[in-house]
Length: 283
Length: 283
Image (cartoon, rainbow over all chains, first blue to last red; front, side, top):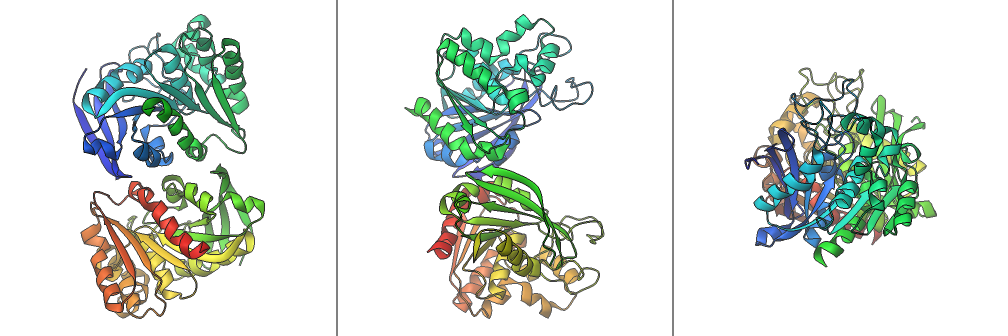
């Protein structure tokens, strides 16, 4: 792993610092940008737990940093926020052949691709679960306690990262996740390209399939707006509800009346999620 | 005044609604977009006071709506937020001849221009102080109690709107305002074009000049980051400090260590400003 971090920007925020870094990722084979919010107590020499946030289709780290309003309570609670990009990027990284926004750049789906030409770079699962935490924990005052959350494609990512890696996260939550990607158009497009046509291999990257065999039963907190344009076609929270019920997996799925798919929805409930994670990370 | 409002977008946020509207402004002679955040209690039939927010150079209403995180506490306190654009716009509205971002479109400086070709459209003072509040108070459940705040060029705007119009606002505050535009490059460029070369006319639009003759002494709350790149060249808070001291005008100027000019600074202190306004608007 390259250990060179280049500071892209640095902003004081709620007494702490939001910093963006660029580094060469060996997992992804390209330069990557991520952001980290360090709460005020890190400046006093304290180590803090970290909440990883995975963003949705077409996002970068900046959507969450700028729009979610998470820094206020993260500063108060003493939790770092680690915010990766949503895919490998750069001119050497192949993107969607038609330039679509739901595949390729900005749409890595937090899996490890197995099919050419995607398998060389599209390994966001290993980047988010292994390379980035190792780098963060070596570089910043974090104590190794990890939570994970995300929005839409990143909600799928958060659920799948936690379900695939027992013991690695103390807490997990999601906003409007793509709950059952095997059975929705966004997921079918991505999985058929990244993983190939054999749908049996897709089950390793689908929260509803993984939940059946999960050995660790971290309680899932999921918020879903009922005015979300993607609810019925892409997000399928009822599939997650059925899978959790069948497996006896603890799930709190809150349907939020009137809320849509965007960051005005995320910001309205981010404090509840931070408190959910704080219980496990600080309790 | 045209009374037709077209809904541009509508997002539920913290139990209330953030709505953007488009309307034909008779003051500005063009179509304008503005946003309003209606806190939850308005849905229960209550009327609430309104805080007007004026944004900075190159901004639209969206910077504040998306990045300041003001809706959380505005919802809790029961204050509406009214967020106009920063200038007249459109293909019929002349902009900077060189396409610069610090004059013309996005840079109306909240004054009434007196020189051709600007005087036809650039009348943001009258729009913000008269036309928009009249429209808002006729259309939405607001009770006519008004506060005003803003950032950078909008901080200048907030101070000047309050100082020029005693009785019209119950409270005023600013983030990193252009405090003394007569004596900084941004202000000199704008005033010399919008108002012409006679600097005596500029005094009507300069907070430091206006404060000397202010008949109403609303307490001013101003936050200023000490790592702001524009501090020494453009913002000149010490001129405001001198003018307020000379006039016996109550000013709380807080220099915030490490903070820069952006919305990470604004969001860190917006709650303090909302509480400052709430004291006057709800007290």
